[in-house]
Amino acid sequence: MRTTINRRNFFRIAGGAALVAAGASVLPGFVGKGWLSPTQRAGAQEAAPDLDFAATDGWIALPASPAMPPYHPDNMAPAPFTTYVFGFRNVTGLNATQILGQKMRAQHSAPMFWVNQETTMRLRLTNLGLAIRPDLVDAHTLHWHGFRHVIPFFDGEPMGSVSVPIERNFTYVFRPHDPGTYMYHCHVEDIEHVHMGMTGMVIVRPTQNGNTSLYPSGRYAYNDGDGSTGYDREFGLLLSEVWNEAHWDDSHIQLPQWTEYRVDFGLINGRTWPDTIAPNAPFAPSASNPDAFTFAVERTADGDLVAPPGAPHLQYQPLTSLITCNAGERVLLRFANLGFTEAAMTATGIKLQVIGRDATLLRGRTGADTSYLTSTVTFNAGESADVIFTAPAYRGPDPYDTYLLYNRASTHGNGAQMTEIRVYPAG
Image (cartoon, rainbow, N blue to C red; front, side):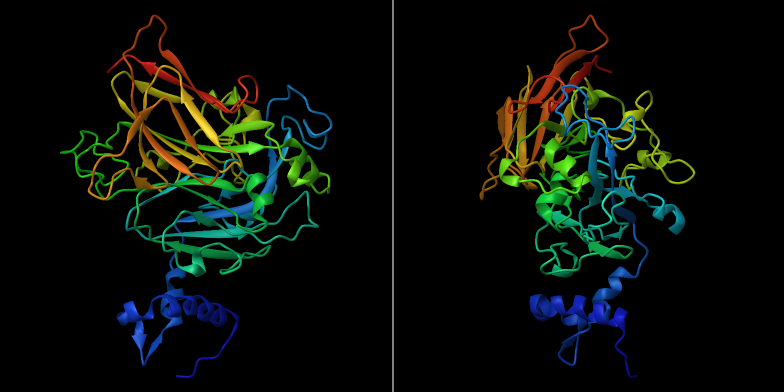
C-alpha cells in the first residue's frame, strides 16, 4: 500500500524519527526491515487524553496592601483582581465551545496532577492565545521538569520537540518510571512564561502503594521496602514568585528588565499570605477518587471556575496551602520551587524529616538511609523536596494548635510565602 505524505503523517514521522536515533536497537518489536515505524510510536497519541489543559492569560488577586504604584494593583485589573498572569486551565470534559470560552480565565498555580508509576497517561494541551496581548503570538508547551529519559518528541523543550501554536493542540504521552515530586512549566520564552504563572506540580505515586503490611494507610512517597516513607496525609506545596513590574509590563505592552528582578510576593499554590489559609475551591465528586489524575474543581455551566466559599477574589487560585492533621499522624509535604530564588521553608516547633530530593529517595549506594531531620528545608529554583513530619500532641485549649510554615527569605506580613499547620486532637 502506498502512503501519501500529508500534514498529519509528516508530524507522525517527525515524532517517530526522534526515537530512531535514541532507541531502535533496544526496541526490536517495532523494527521492520531495519526501520522503526514512526506511525506505531505516534499512534500513542491517538487514544483519548486523560487530561485536557488549555493555555491562556487571566487575572488573579494578591493583597492590595502594601500598594506598589503604578505596578500593583494593576489599573487594568477588573475587580476583585489585581495582577495579570499567564497560565493553564484544566478543561477536561468541556466541549469545543466551552474550551474556547476559557480564554482569559487562566488558573494559578496551574492544575496539580498525578500519575501512578509505570502507568501511561495522555495530556492534550490547547493554546487559546492571550486576550490582553493579541500581539504576542507565542506558542506554548508543557515541559515535565525532571522527568528522566523522556521521549524528546514529548519533552516540551521547544528546540527539540513540538510547540503548540495558537488555536492548535498537541497530546503529550508520559509513562513515568520514577516516583516522587516533580513540576511542569511552559518552556517557550521560559523566563517570562514561568514567571508569569505557567507552572504546576506533578506527583508520581509508587507501585508500593496499597501495601498495608508496611504502613497501615498503604500510602507511600517512594518504593522504600520498609514503610519508612509511609504517610497518613499529603500536601503539595508549589512555590512561585511575583515581581509586580514584570506582570504590569506584560499587561501594558512593555518589556521588563529582568536584570532588575526582585520578589514582591512569595506564593504557595498560587496564593500569598493570608490567602494561603483560605479554603479550597469546591471540588467535584471525582476529586475523592485516588485514581483520578487531578482535582476536579467545580465549574459553572460555561466551564468557568467556581470560587472558594466567601472568597470571590480567589476564583482563579483554587488551591489552599493550609495543612491540617490529627495528633500522631505522619504528614507528607511535597515541596517544589518554580520561583527564581532559593527557598528556606521553616516549621516553627516541628521537626521535618527530609526523605527525598528531586524525585529521588535519600538512600546511599548501599541502601543506607541518608534522610535527615531539620527545622528548615532549603531548595533552589527547579528543585523539589519530600518531607515527612509526625504531628505533635494536641495541647489545646483551642480547637486546634497552630504552627507556622514559612520561607525565611520572605517577608512575614501580607504577601509572605507562609501558611499554617493546624494540629487537631487525635482520632
